[in-house]
Image (cartoon, rainbow, N blue to C red):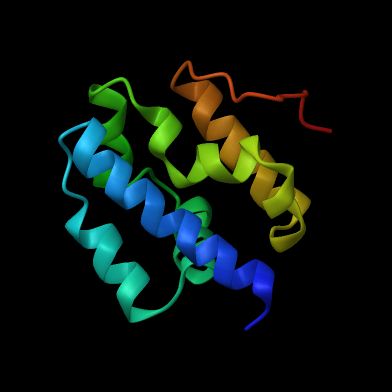
Length: 109
């Protein structure tokens, strides 16, 4: 596992922690996914899913889409090399569909 992947795992565990403390949302399924595989596999699974996860919906209802995998992936250039252009576009499109404009956003190519 590369240093970037280890750092990404930490970022994923951090949004779990922040969701629990800042949004009063205990993302148990997300935590299980992280524990069963790794952050990158979990993020790619969620981004490539046909529908949003229950966790995404819960964070949307709390006004905290900034704590979603999609936001982390699209708002930080340090993670962009871990994802395909299509995955990044998909994550941005999902956020925009829920009226969340990612920071550092540029229109999908």
